[in-house]
Length: 150
Image (cartoon, rainbow, N blue to C red; front, side):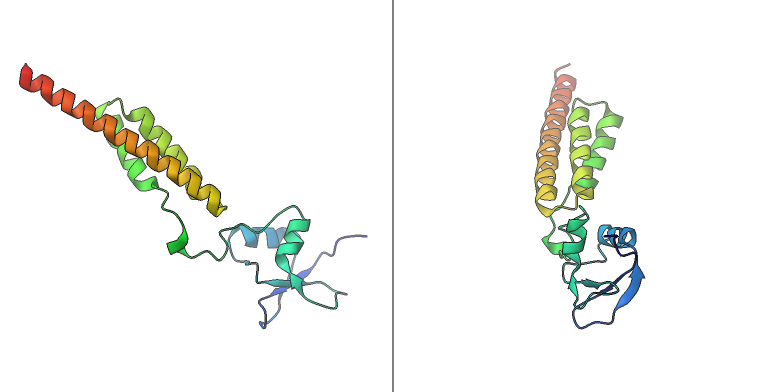
């Protein structure tokens, strides 16, 4: 049985929109314009079904961040990580590798569509950022001590 080429979507009680291809629905899901509350229908169907089931059967589940409120999402610590990376690089400190790791983890968290994975990566970025702060401050204290003692 061939897959229908045209899909119509709607929010419950809303006006149908479409037609869309499956590829277009996948893009809409990635852009977080589809939520699990959306329904879909194709020519010949007698009822509207959840769009999440269609995308799951197409091996493309709707991202977990869909519909999540910005306040519920964990901070990724990307901005402070980048700032520490720049400061560490300019000052040529030993904290640079920790700042790089913090930026990588924060960027991965920032691009994650899974809330739990985003939280784990954000926690990791926060840990590496704190290590970076500690190493930076310790190196600064040692530098000042060397100047004072000299």
